[in-house]
Image (cartoon, rainbow, N blue to C red):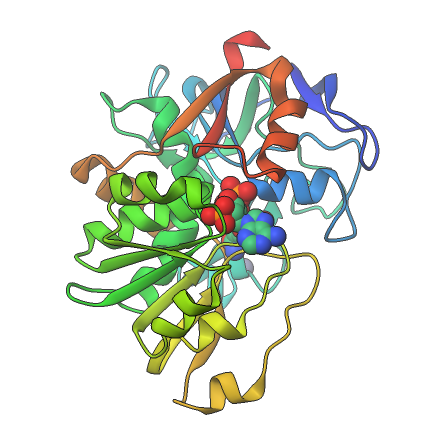
Length: 347
Ligand code: NAP
Ligand code: ZN
Ligand code: ZN
């Protein structure tokens, strides 16, 4: 076994603390990755604080993982020692069901082994995530990261990037469309960069007036303070597509009403409490309310390659591991520009 250092929540709502645990010796198809950077996603906070229910402890969060390959199993073909490598939100799936065969492993009908707060394919062995020094993953679930990219700024692409890229590709966001991004945090700022790169005209909906200048710098053409009812009324019937990244309950009808007819609002934000939907917000204009979950391995690789080519990276604040708990609190307060990334050298 490989002895690994990490940070874990030992029980619900406990601060994360140093935690020593073991990873498996690499199997023939595994790569061992020395983790350099771990991103902090709001899902880490939701799960460490058991806001969605069913959390498993001890929990080592972290599903935005970038590092260097330090060892490979005998059958590994795509990686060698010293290569950059990334791991996202899951580390295995059944590989046989129709979803896995289509490369949609996040929707595996048998079992998706999420990177943490889940179990391996034996449904018993707990998985531990990226707030740690090393991870052992099958090469089929490991992403290639190009050389000569800023690794700390690539790290958030493994969740925030793919979660916003995938629905834009699925709903075919394209040049000339009007796209709204609700919530300017980790996911939201990637959504702005990606939608702008696809040629869309992007409006940021935010509750924070202080983020207006950043929205423009990130590539948005407009900024809408969503708490202001006159602003919302002015935008009624305006958007082809809206991506909603808000992590908490919020009034969604006002956003639905800003869609054109046949427009789609995709929820990626995962509020623990329900949202209230007025039937008429959808009925009028034949609008669609949809959801989307991260992305499969092929699409995640496509997104990483696309971002490397277009030089699209996350805006990050790199922190030492000792600041994790503070970063969780700051994220909940909306005080992040726009993703915390842990420097694992400090572990
Ligand atoms: P984040 O960095 O904290 O950003 C969330 C943003 O939502 C905040 O910056 C804030 O933006 C807005 N917001 C927060 N509380 C709000 C409230 N009470 N009312 C209105 N707006 C509020 O979080 P994140 O990492 O981007 O994650 C966002 C959500 O997506 C989380 O729920 C997370 O679990 C979920 N998620 C889902 C997937 C998926 O596959 N579907 C993947 C990753 C994450 P403003 O200040 O601009 O208003
Ligand atoms: Zn995430
Ligand atoms: Zn499957």
